[in-house]
Image (cartoon, rainbow, N blue to C red):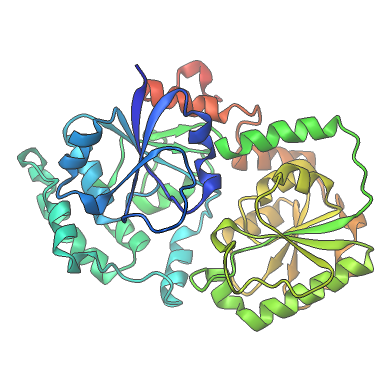
Length: 410
């Protein structure tokens, strides 16, 4: 009989479901999301249920009877309550990474707070949500009663990540944290104050499996670059995005026009790969004869065939550098740990969003500072495994609760 996995995941992004869709014949997944469904079509093939349909977290567990639970985050009252209830009755819970995390997350969280992008929690204004949260407690949790009861106050005074950083009790921690690599775990360690790897399982990045395999196919194929192009991996043009909040509509518009003009001077079109969170945004720019807007696509092929790749701080920076060994990134007024780290490794060149020139983007600039040891450090930090088998390791963790020793990297 298949193990049943309760998946508390972001239902707005199809790309984040790929590892679970790949494993759908191995497990029975049930998706738990925050709110009742909108009119948007489902992006996954699994049964979907909603927190607001249940009075207590134990009602969720009685209905689903999961063998494991995977969380996207454990930073809301319903998520914390479900985690507490599951651990009370012996169900393993996992917090799983879903991207490349910046090591300076606490500073960036404060920046988001200062920009007004992370609203303080309003959940405690809902009696039903607060009741759901409180009814997770059992007498055996008496040692954390005070911290558990104080947490809503901490959440109302702070923003989510900062509130978690200021708190320390068992209900906010999963049984295991499934992470890409030790370096990527600095994000989580900085929040919770972990000093070792005991709670972590490192599997690589399942979402990169398909890309890595595709790159290997493309290396052996004949590429005809009849229509050369520059590729920009964009951040989403939505009001709640930190990059967009800082840059703004007019400045971003001028950037697009200047970049399209620079590409044209090199005999190339500009292809802009939108972030999934902003596919439907009315703020996307399309009014230029030398720009192609890209949404769903064969991203490995798009990267592989690009003459020049450009980005900001996207997770897709990683497969770009893996394949191209270089990328241009744009600084827009905010220091971001990922950009800083990659600049120090010599694998990206940082350009001003406003003051770059067409000459700055010449493809001959590639590999000027390339160093084999820096590239190896990059692989260890941001890919960890490059065998395209991260989804297989995820399967093992869900089956066994951990990785077998011979499947660990070290």
